[in-house]
Image 1 (cartoon, rainbow, N blue to C red):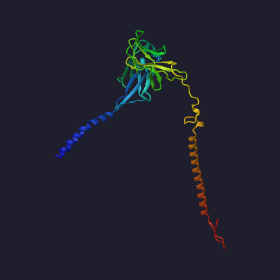
Image 2: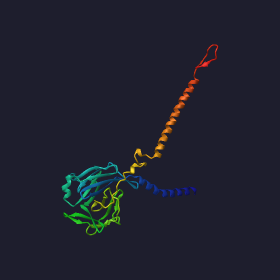
Image 3: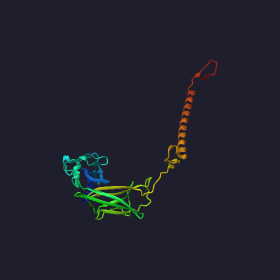
Image 4: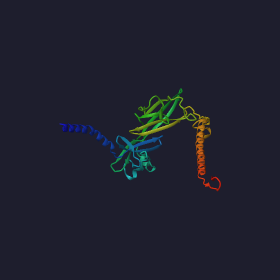
Length: 307
C-alpha cells in the first residue's frame, strides 16, 4: 500500500506541474521576427513609412536591430522597389518614397506598400488611401475655435472623410495637450471637427506663440496624418536673466554657494594636511633610525662614544 500511495502522489504532482513546465517552455521559445508598416504624412507634404521589426520572446515583444527589409510599391518587382533598409537599434527603419517612383505614386489615389523580409513568403503589406488634413482658426467675440477637416482623394477629387478619429490640441513636450474638453474628436459627414479652445493663459515662447496640432493616428485607411499651425495665443515667457547670477547649485563656478566652497576647501585642506603630516612622520622615523644605527668609536683611555 505504501508503494502504491507514493506512485499516486507522484502522478498527482506530475499533473500539477506539467502545465507550468509547458508554459515555461513556450515562454523560452524565440519566434521569428515580424515586420509592421506605418504610413505618415506631415503637414500634407512630407510622406514616409516606418518599418518596425519585433520578435516575441516569452510574453513580450523585443526590437530586432539590424534586420534587413525590402520595401516595394504595389508589387514586389525590381522596378517598384522603394528602398532596401536595415532596422536600427530600436528595430525601426524610416523610408521616404524616392523621386523615381513619383509617376507611379501620382497615378493612383490608393497604393499598397509591401515589405519583404527574409524568405519570399515573409510578406507584410499595408494599403493606404491618399488623404490630407487641414487646420484653420477663427476668433469670434473672444472665443477661439479650431476647425479641422480631413479629406481623401478619389477620382482626382478631394472628398470629405467622415468618422475619422483624431487628437486636436497644443504641442507639448509630453505629447498633445487637448484644446477642448475631449481627448479625441471624430469628423462629421463633412469631414470636419470644430473645437472651442479652452486653454487660456497657456505659456508660449518668448513671443507668446505655441503650436496647434491635429493628428490622426493609425487609421485603417489613411495611416497617420499630422498638421501643425503656430498661433500667438500664449503668454510670452521671458527668461530670467538674473537667475544664474545667484549662488545656486546650477550656477557657474564663480557663483558657487559659500557652504559648498567651505566643504570643498575643507576636504582639500584636511587631505593635504594628512599627507604633510605623514611625510613629516616618515622623515622623523628615518632620522631616529639613523641615530640608533650610528657605530661606536673606541678611544684609548676614554669612554666609548658614538658619532
